[in-house]
Image (cartoon, rainbow, N blue to C red; front, side):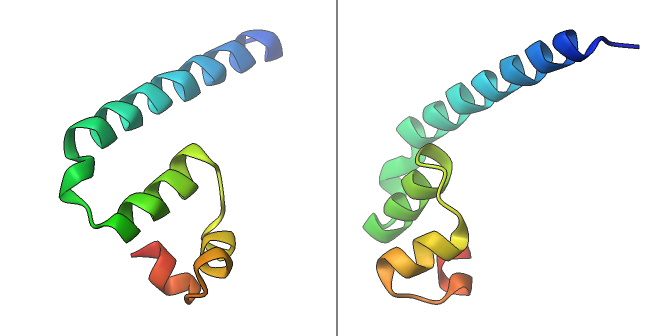
Amino acid sequence: MLSEERHKLILEKLERESVVYLNDLFDIYGELLTEKQRDYFRDYYFDNLSYGEIAEKYSVSRNASFK
């Protein structure tokens, strides 16, 4: 069984790798998104806003910020 410290280090590494992966995807495909989609993507993945916070920020429904 993994120690708590080792488990935490593994999770941190996975999180860093996920951020790099999302950055790469955004760099490659970002221009295919609409401006609004790019804003939502940045807010959710890079600024860690929830769908509810994004909806409030742009005065749209939570469902609209999810799509």
